[in-house]
Image 1 (cartoon, rainbow, N blue to C red):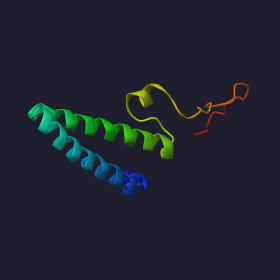
Image 2 (cartoon, rainbow, N blue to C red):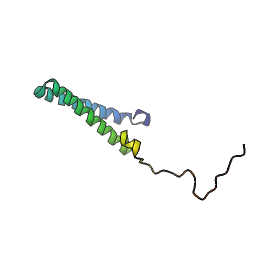
Image 3 (cartoon, rainbow, N blue to C red):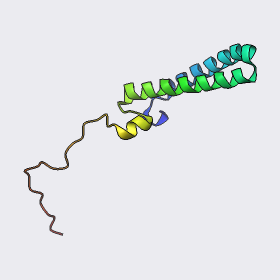
Length: 91
């Protein structure tokens, strides 16, 4: 996100994810101990990735992750018109 001039939005999402991780860790450690810390960290990481994927799709208009590798979100332009002859270069 920093290469696309959206670094403030990415930083805000990261800070919100960290705050969620801290609050969830406090709550889950109280109930489940060390397993609760693992669950809270995993949940915070999943929420952060989903939020970043939504942000990338909404503002940059492409599908991130594995789904983006298989599905094109932009219409493909043909390389040449079907009835237009391609001229050879005279090099």
